[in-house]
Image (cartoon, rainbow, N blue to C red; front, side, top):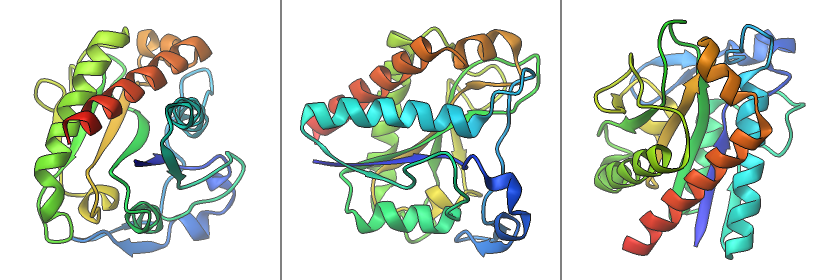
Length: 215
């Protein structure tokens, strides 16, 4: 089995604004190539969090015998653009893929949200499988982590989005996970913890295995 992992953003995105601010076509409208992502009040960046979780997850999946395709392999670079990230995972013909993020929501809001694609042409054939994978991710997060369902995004932890290139352009089953709210002090205390990042990786591993076994 092939699993695609996209750790959102990149550690040096802020050093090259002319690159990350260039406009790309996300399948429905124009958006920027990428952003710097959010950070905690203490300065811990989303890019670092995403990469840490992705590398823990990659190690688990390699141990399980999967092939793993990553959209970036360090946290010191810039990009790639969100369109290129989608293409990398599509080209890998992944059996399932995941975009790993943490949110910069209202400070009073807590929790994780699973972002699902909306049919728009390129992704038509993977809407049902992406929804099934999203349910597995929600189940695993509730079972294996201390982060609750989002209090401000989506419905029962699920949010349908048509404005993100990674979801609009996917040809493989894929969801985006906002693992928690970095702007909320309670969530942030979990998200900066290496032990908790490992818990998230184990939850995502369990969700991926559960999804692939049903396939």
